[in-house]
Length: 141
Image (tube, rainbow, N blue to C red):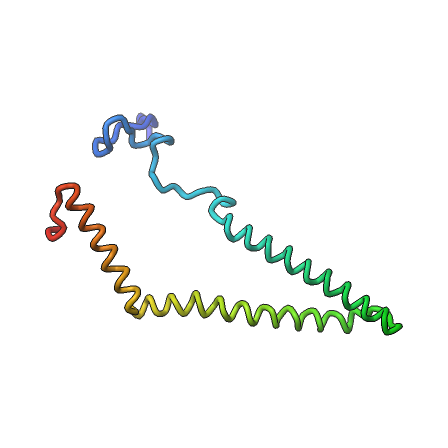
């Protein structure tokens, strides 16, 4: 609109010395840039690709050496099914454990197992203590 100023104004609800529109004093929880926001997934993906390539190369070397020992030549048609089978065997054992730990624990937490209730009570006690420390009554909302 015409005539409106784009200069940030002082936010009356903000503490003294803070302005509402300032970039430096902006919201405390800004979304980080893409690489930083997904850094864990990127590192995990890179480690996965690196280890899978390593498995491929080492297994190909072993298959080639075994073929040479028996006087045969290396055959991709025999190697690829063997490589994929060993890959899926590894993934099955590892991912079933991981999925059970992540999904199972989330399910038990959702159901309200004794451990999750214990945790909620502890968090509530800490919040009540912080409210009392600041002179607020936790019983009155």
